[in-house]
Length: 555
Image (cartoon, rainbow, N blue to C red; front, top):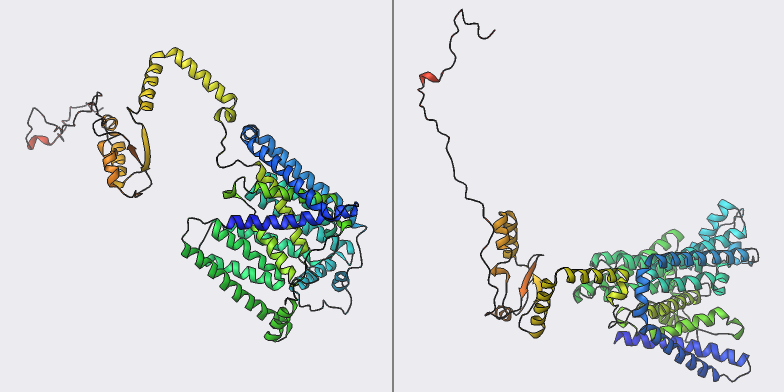
């Protein structure tokens, strides 16, 4: 049910964007706006057909990928480095032409008798402190601020690349990195002084930390510091509420075997950490600024209070570039590739993030300093990458043939098998007879394997520590074999220990009959006592005899 809702929300967002962009392009080209719906539907139809053919051929493509894995790793690294270098060149080219009339430069530069003004927006104040420190070290050069923007954005994009690669694969990570490094919108934002880059870097680092650490452990106490961290980001900007999405998704999806009580406790601890963390952030602000606690809290809520519903996105025809059209086309792929393997889809976090950003922007909660459009665009980049990456995954019912996957190794194995048939024809015929009996139902092979019991585990240790002949005779005993009648009596299988127990499926009449051990067993040890044939008296037991004067034997 949740996956269907996620897919519906993603389809609505992508469809609205597609219709809006194509309608504006049609108007710009002299056509009526409603032709945009037709072109979007036509493209979606072709995309669905292409994705269907690609998904059906994945079972034939995957063997080649598996056999040449090292080659694809080198190719992936080459493309990633190429995207980074090209993105860096684009940004270096635009440093000289960057707009130097930014208000943040005037507020943060080093000037005699001028301090950084106190601002209510936490992210803006933190960004001004960063710029002020950089100007104190390198001088009041506008290019210093621009390079800080570039470094922050590219570092954040690399964190996004490795996070997506871990969750959705290399293809999704490369597509996201390519758009993030080379898209004109991303390059333009890196050449403007804005607190969005600093907050974007911190937000991405926090998301990566949540996914890496809290997806493995579900101890409720560990979620208290997570709640405190989310409260700090909320204090800096209301966009920090977006961190609750990966936190809740990690709890619900990555810990499916955990009890519901543990999940509820984790959610409660997160919310408690958020409340206490936010209170201490307001308290710290009041302490350092000298204002009252109520005044600081009132200023924060006044900054982010809703201003009524409004349309959050306005697209202009001249702002629709070729990169955004390609981005939208890749996002449409995700509508159909979502069902390639819905049990392992990786779009939930980004879809919920995009929906929450649009909802917050609709009520005018974002500020002018950080409108949320940049984070929304990055979310669309990630969705486009994941949508393309899911096209190259196997469906749950698809499998790769062993001969296609092994290639030459499989052929050599077949040659060895045919050689063995020629050398040992009798053994091969016996194997064929046994296989025919198994297929006809006359003989049943091993059917099920469960865990060893403690008794069998102790028995196995005693067998290994015993003599070699007894060990060969007692490897499989009657206590290891469970008949179907005994299995029916066991309604529930209880795992005891970590060893494994052999369960055979056969009738009682056709039970295994063990032969007598043909190997010689070691003889039983007989205790022996050392005895002498001559009795010596106690007086004769002293061998220290006196030596006469003429006895020179010892010389």
